[in-house]
Image 1 (cartoon, rainbow, N blue to C red):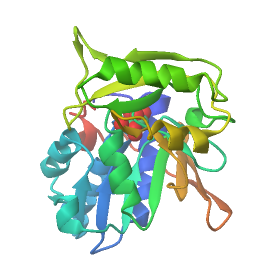
Image 2: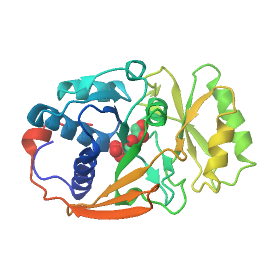
Image 3: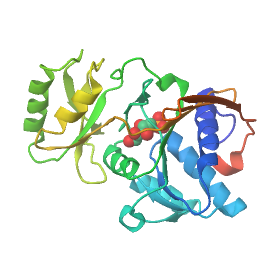
Length: 262
Ligand code: 5RP
């Protein structure tokens, strides 16, 4: 990534930069997936290389693992870490209770396992992802390839009885082929438009055989760090009930981020 960043990239960058302030020496840190999380991994790598920060990172996808190693973070598996101090990840949508839709990047399964195995989850985001009611972003659901069309039919049948607005279910594609996750599964995107009871939807979806996990993260996120293109950052802590504000000076750090592709 070279030259002037777009306002949205600046927002993602300042959210990521502010969130790494929560990381302390010796921590085991869950590393999210996606373009915002990639900024965070870069920022952490910078602290490791230039400030001597000592952490171990558990990535939530092969692409985050590759990036983390590239920037000098000591990468370990979740089984090696057993439990994490903190996970920092992006999201596709968040509401006022910090419930989330995740999985736009197809990594929701590892992301949910890692975030759930953490003392704290911080979501980094730009302001556009805040919604009154979850559901405008299609809800990703990871399904095993065996009998996926039957699984889709069962989902469509279930949706009739749920408080949602849309009911289209589409197989996520990667060019001409079905998208394949790191675990070798497929993703069904549920175009619900509005999810009236996200807690219920999250629970009942996982009762359908063939569904591995869904992208609703309920009661998992503790803090959201919201970045703005002008450098303002807002930190909302759902447990403390606090809202704090900060402003970061934005320097065009193209030596740090010049080859970013995620
Ligand atoms: C990947 C995710 C991402 O966190 C989510 O899609 C947000 O991505 P981005 O930061 O690129 O907007 O859930 O599975």
